[in-house]
Length: 149
Ligand SMILES: [Zn+2]
Ligand SMILES: [Zn+2]
Ligand SMILES: [Zn+2]
Image (cartoon, rainbow, N blue to C red; front, top):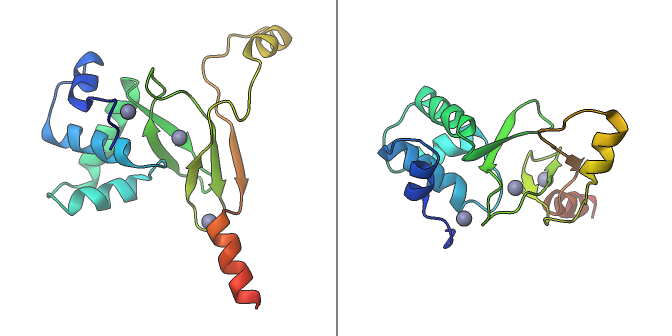
């Protein structure tokens, strides 16, 4: 649970009217240490209440649209969802494990990007930066080692 964020206040400030499902979706995303897929969010929600897949998709679209949630592309042609960068949550890049499909948040500042230099070099306005590192996560490396022995 993030102690800094008041999720219902965050929705209100972003112009999203409050519903139980919207708040729950945001809580599930905010409480997770790593970005989640639609399937994972839906599965977690189903434990406590009845909500269909399409509703979850619609809510995710809305939250992304309003800048509350960030949609992150993963190496499996799908998406993961995490809290959008804010004063409580500095922007950061992600690592994607191509074996188990889990995504990890990297330390903010681990991969500094010189946006101004990039903008100058391509003479374009950059609106969004998404950097994804792909590889094999620690868990999967360990499992692999166990199998080899
Ligand atoms: Zn927070
Ligand atoms: Zn893995
Ligand atoms: Zn993240």
